[in-house]
Amino acid sequence: MSYFALLTGGQANALRFEQSTVDGKLTQTYNGERLKFLPKRTFNYVTTTVVDNSQALKDAVVALEAEKSALLAQQSLASDALNQAVSALATLEQAKTDITLANAKRTAAIAEAQMEFDSASAEAKTANTTLRQALASQEEALANLEKA
Image (cartoon, rainbow, N blue to C red; front, side, top):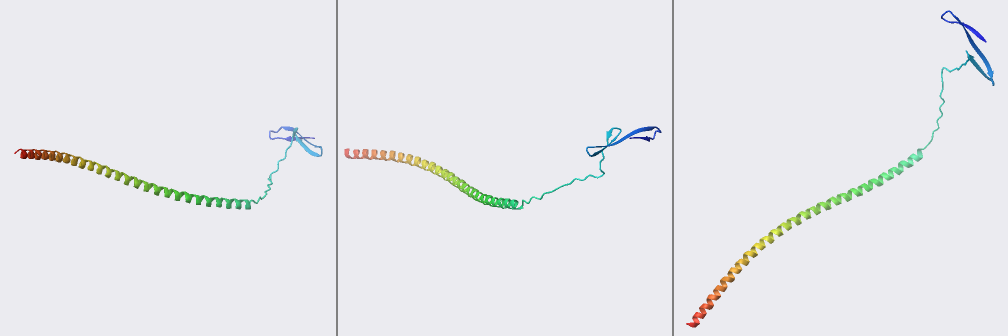
């Protein structure tokens, strides 16, 4: 089936429009090309399935809360251990300072005692020398007294 159409240029053109049924389907062609009809509106059909995972989520929350409380207890124990270690370190530092001070005092006392010993030793040597001289002069005096 052919149709004629008058276009705007004033010329008549032959248009060819055909309809046929193939395998029970209506097929339409326009100038040998198949016509495609697009609807003005298209619909997207969406189906949703609700999956109830609330019990699993509640169980996971309970497990996480238990893990959190265990970790907080562990953190508290670690914090206490750290505080004890810091206190022990401060005590050891104080003991080190006391020992260093005691060593300095001991070294000073040893040096002072050594100086006193050296002084007393020198005095003893002087006294010993004086005593020997006195004994020698006494013996000489006794010897002179016996001769006389």
